[in-house]
Image (cartoon, rainbow, N blue to C red; front, side, top):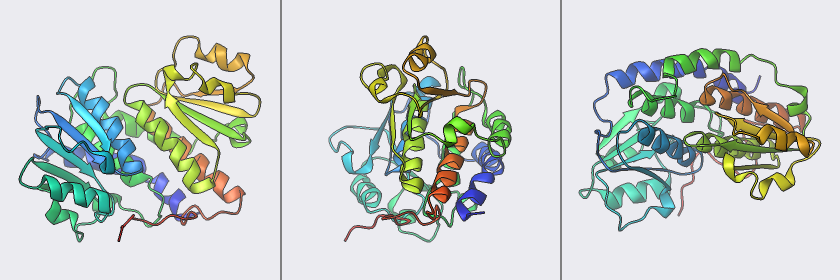
Amino acid sequence: MSRTAAEIATQPTCWRRAADVAAAFDGFPRPGERVAVTGCGTSWFMAIAYAALREAAGLGETDAFASSEFPAGRAYDRVVAITRSGTTTEVLELLTALKGKVPTLALTADPKTPVMEAADSVAVLDWADEESVVQTRFATTALAFLRAGLGDIPGVKTVAEAAVDAELAVTEPLPEAVLGAEQWTFLGRGWTYGLALEAGLKMREAAGAWTEAYPAMEYRHGPISITGPGRVTWVFGALPDGLSVDVSRVGGTLVANQGADPLADLIRAQRLAVILAESKGFDPDRPRNLTRSVILT
C-alpha cells in the first residue's frame, strides 16, 4: 500500500479529532465578520468550500481567493489562511502584508515553520500531517475543523455524521465504469464546488489523468460536450434536476452518491486517483513535477 493510500484511510479518525479540537478552539471568525479565506492549490479549494459553508450557516459574508490573487484593496474583518507546510511563499507574503492591518488565522500541519510568526493566531493540526506530497487527509481535516466551528448548517451533516460516511468511503469498492474510464468531469454546487475542483486536481496530480471541474449548473453550458462513452460525470452533493438524463443521453457514466456526505465522497475520488496512478506505474506519494511546498526564490 502506498503512503498516500494509508493516509487516505485515516480520514474518519482525523475528522472526529478535528471536531473535538474545534469545540475547544476560540480563534474562529466571529458571527457577522466579513471574512476572506485563502490558500494555494488544494488549500485554496478547501477555502472555497469553507467560504460557501460559512455563508450557508448565516455567519457572514465570506470570500475565497488563491493567495497570489488576494485583492489587496478590499477590507475584511479577518483573514483565514490554510497552509499544510507553513512555508508556501504566496501565503507567507500575504500574511506578512496583512500583519497589523487585519486579524489573521492560519491552519497548518507544522508548528516549526514561518507561518507561526506570520499569522496572529494558528491552529496546528499536526496529527493530520502527511508524508506524501499529495494532500489528502490534511486538507479534508482542515475543512472538517473549520466546518465544525460553524455549528449547525441547514442541509449539511455534522462532522461526526460525515465521519460515519467516510468509514464506508475508505473501503467500498469503486465501480468498474469509473476505474476504466478515460476522462472524468467533477461537478458541485455551493460548498461542494470546491470539492469538485479538488477531486479534479487530485486525479491530475497523482495519476496525470484528464479531468475537469465545474459548477454543476454550468455543465450544460459547454462542458457536456466532452461527455460520452467511457467518460464519467461525477457530482458531489445534490444532483441537479435533469442532469442524469442529459448524461445518459450522450452516453456518459453518472456518479452521484446522494446519501453520502460530499466530503466523504471526496475520499472515493482520492482513492481513484491512487488506483489509477498505480495502474500506470506512477508513484502516488511522489507525483511528477511536484514538491510538498512551493517556495519561490
